[in-house]
Amino acid sequence: MKQENQPKVIPVIIPTNSMLRTYNCYLIKGNKEVTLVDAAIDDDEAYNYFLETLADNNLQVKDITQIVLTHNHSDHTGFVRRIREQTKVDVYAHPNAHLRLMRDEKFLTRRIDFFNQLYTEHGCGERGKAEVKRMAEALTKNENLRVEAPILPIVEGGMINQFKVIEVPGHSIDQIALYNQMTGELIAGDHVLEHAPSNALVEMGFEGEMIQSLYLYEQSLKRCEKLPLNIIYPGHGIIVEEKCNELFTERLNSIARKSKRIKEAVIKQEQTASMLAKNYYKKRYDTLFVLVMSEMIGHLERLVIKGELMKTYRNSVYVYSENKNNINH
Ligand SMILES: [Zn+2]
Image 1 (cartoon, rainbow, N blue to C red):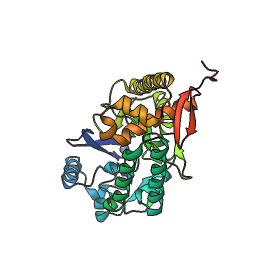
Image 2 (cartoon, helix red, strand yellow; image 1 turned 90 degrees about the vertical axis):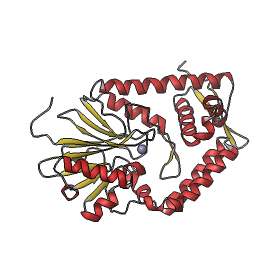
Image 3 (tube, helix red, strand yellow; image 1 turned 120 degrees about the horizontal axis):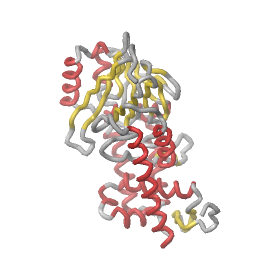
Image 4 (cartoon, rainbow, N blue to C red; image 1 turned 45 degrees about the vertical axis):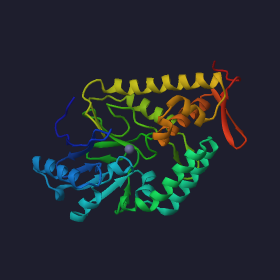
């Protein structure tokens, strides 16, 4: 399917000892433009590795004409400052990323209040309070993660070096992927990884509402499952060159399986999200609290949207129970 005159994707795969395995950036090299997609973490060793890979491909930092961020997480934005110190390239991201990339204090403070309420209403007690305290401390501690660049918006349908922007919210509210229709190449950010499921993280929307992250994530997976694909370039781990569509199917199936188990537990006994998370994830409730609660709330809300469970606000917490009126049985 590879066509003439298509831009070349040059992967930059930076190793790490963490569970992420690698930080992946990609250069899209066209006739005139060299786009850098994602910018790993702010770390000397990682940056040197990046410079070496550029040199191996007869490129230098000043050859980069623009940066595209697939989403706002700091393990995708790390080199922006260093690159812009050398060359004032434009930085593009989805509009939902802007306040997060700027680390807008008003927005982040509101976001902490949101999580405080969320964890309280889902029965997380002291563990929730500890997480909120950590978030408040991170407000100043992580100031250095601010992306110091004017961010230009890119949305669905926009074109970057012959790659089309597609919005795939779920892992994050601003997640985009870049798709080349001619070659079947998909630069996926963290929308899908080969070695592990991506987390659909609970998030606050602009109105202070909860984003239905897992539900959105499922829609975004379904969308990519149908695309003609030859290769997936993910944000971490190995590049997927075979069974690309099957990877999306697998992720969808595992969401459905997990939801089914959670639904069965709720049908046995009505529960709060934190009770379910403690029973389901055991020790990981404490060690991976944010991920585990995101996942549990995501599944419960998905089941409520589908009419399979219902949610009642009782004594200041949400209790999930079987929806006996569900006509889809
Ligand atoms: Zn991410």
